[in-house]
Image (cartoon, rainbow, N blue to C red; front, side):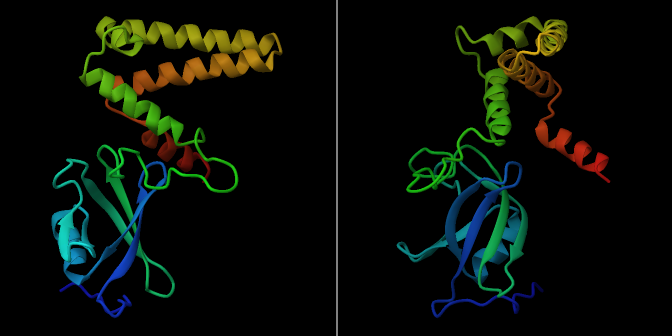
Length: 205
């Protein structure tokens, strides 16, 4: 039996859950769960929540197709908040945005930081499956592995040249091109940046 005794539910039997992308750590949404939705989540492997407005349990993605595969559940030190790490299919927000937290009201906008690598490879994976007229990414996949490898080699050489020229702008431009083509290569082999980050983490030890 699942032991939920460490959790502190409110007077309505609910507990807030912060939902975070397992790969990018992006905060996607805030929702509520009760004991039954927690059990369903663990049993099925997909996030289930309790809707306060509809007064019922719902499975994320049941109508939109934007499912959330649960990777891990944590509780905070007081036991009154759950942190859910998920593998998000599509977008998390009903507005069509990736995250519900897309409106900045103060401070620096996070857009464009490290999670761009995951958003980039998501787009590349989509181009691999769905042909888009005029897409350079689709062109690379059509030409195959040899073309992709050639471009990776060319861009790596351009990075070296930019560094030899001691041009910061040139380095930024060429490294960006290299990362893009490396992302295409990863996608070709059904890999993504998570696989690379795991290996890098091992090298820190």
